[in-house]
Amino acid sequence: MRLKNYKKWHADPDMALVLYFAQRLDELFFDYTLDTYKPPALNCIFLCREALELIKDIEDEIIDPAHLDHVLDELKWSLSSDLVAKEILNSDCEKFILRGESIKLNETRIRLEVLERTLNPLLYIEICQDLIVEELVGGSKKKIDHLAVKLASTLVNMGVGKQHIYEQVQNFFFFGEDVICVDDLETFFEKISPTEHHFEIYFVVSNLIRQVEESIETFDLEIISSPPKSALSVAEENGLTPNQDEVWLEVKNVGAFDRHTARKRAEAKLDMVRDLFLLFSHKNRITWRAETVITQCCDDTPILIRTPKNTMEKCFDLKASDASLRLNSMIKTLSLSGNSFVRFHRAVDLHAIGATNELPENQLLNVWIALETLVPSHIYGGGKVVKIKNGIMPILLVNYLPRIIQRLTADLVRWNRQKISRIIREASIDSKKRLYEKVLELLVLPDHKAHLDALYAELGDFHLLRLRVFEVSEIFRKPKKIIDRLNEHEVKVNWQIRRIYRTRNLIVHSGRTIPYVDTLIENAHDYLDQAIDAVLAYSCGILSARSIDQAFDMARMDYEVYMSNLKSISSFDEDNIFFVLNGRSA
Image (tube, rainbow, N blue to C red; front, side, top):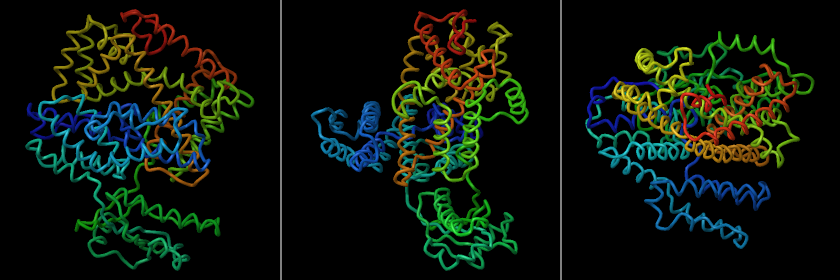
């Protein structure tokens, strides 16, 4: 989260809610935002569609019927809290979800079909935008946040590219013309609307593709001598010119809502040609440049676009120097032996394969297999997905609150290190504590209220960060709120793990994929990273776990103690507040 304060209108008090909306959109579509603050994989519209697809898969005996209950639970929860859906539906949400022993699967399907027809995505977007505009005139930041999340999730699931929306947010709110009034948002909404365009896309491809020139017409590909003059000019300005071993390749008439999605679809055709060629020539690979030139039907100006960021790279990373220290320490102190060391190495290997693979489906499969390899298979009970959920859940829950406060601390430092340091110093917080511990104390303990108020004042036009500070301080103020938040997070993670598993099954057993696969990859990758870090923590620290099974059991026992002690705390004070971060009092 960064403060982008370049425009005159940002300082206008009457436009404060518009600026908050812009800052929240900026965070929603930023690649490295904490998953808690990103758009969810699905909202109620697409949860309904997921349930319908799941019923079909159950009827085709592809998926276990037990999975349906979890999707219906999530759909019910989503509908009950969705302000846009409540505007559209003329009946209580529970009437659209038929379930129970006396209800036939066909009856459930028909009622969900009625719901799916009612929740028309285009109507949903229109009403959502109208509600946003209403709230931006003296409304509630909480409602604006809710509606922004719903809009983001709907657009992404309809097929509008995240990178495209992120660029439009930057251009419109931060680097474009001044926003004069709320009505100007209509222009922004048009720029991110799911409107179909046609694109011509030009790649520089290795000469090897000439060997299959007769076949590529099937994929709407054509080798050309040169792109049109305007596209060629853009290519040459950016140094994109074929050498003697390369040719120009045109991908014709690609339909998409934006250039980035169009490029992705065009490259998928090239991927297919390359992979088919590898069937018959394993030593030779068709390659192409990362840059492409794209023309759009309604825009006379071609644009050069580079390969998008690999989904597996959208995570927290250490600096090279810090990573080398961690690696050296791990090699010296890792106590895993025998089969556990082999399993750990295999999980790390699968993680690396996923990180270097270009195809989203392969990334998801490799990350899931890594989780299966790492999590003990003979404990925690239930089927495969239940074992993995039960195995990693204690790790994810213990990490959840520290990740929130650490990310908030990083955002405050990024905003202004000098100011946050001065406020903490003036609050006379123990200088020996870590910075995120100092921030937590500042946010929670009543003795520091005056200094917390000073922080709110200093944040000025950074409306998003000020609200985030307030929200986090409210969560951490009472143990019961923390327990409720952890319980809610556990339910949501459970739904997501099961969705990842179902998607894995669809890819393997039916060859299908889903439009929100990138979101699932980001979440699955994050779960795997936390599980690997936990194994390292228990096997490289003073506990020196000798096996992966021991490490996971230690994590489970620590979580049980953590929750038991947390439930025993009636209120936080200077002696017990840090328990929420590390399971120990100060």
